[in-house]
Length: 133
Image (cartoon, rainbow, N blue to C red):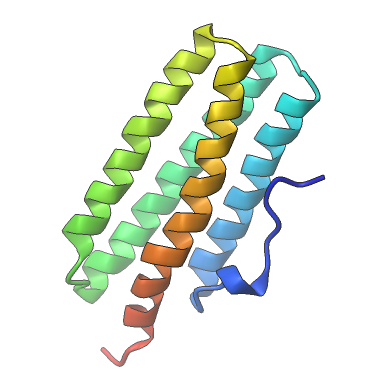
């Protein structure tokens, strides 16, 4: 069973952002699935590393779009991305040496990070993008 289920409620109206978000859902579900299957820690960390790399690419795409369109909340959004990465990197470091409890904490963080970030921040940016330039 998937941890996160993509639905129309997560659509921002921007095809590129929506495609990225769908892929992030898949990556988080892969991480969760590896965790509940008690897969080797090396596999779990490999999946998490792939997720982190893709999230970084996604954030860069978002921030480039924001800069290109003159999004007034760009700096605030960049800080949010930086804070998310700081937390992810801390969890990643702890996970490399920690227990199952840390894996669950990481899964919980990832689930809430993505759904909350889409609902609060990315949807607002997508509305801005939809406005005439």
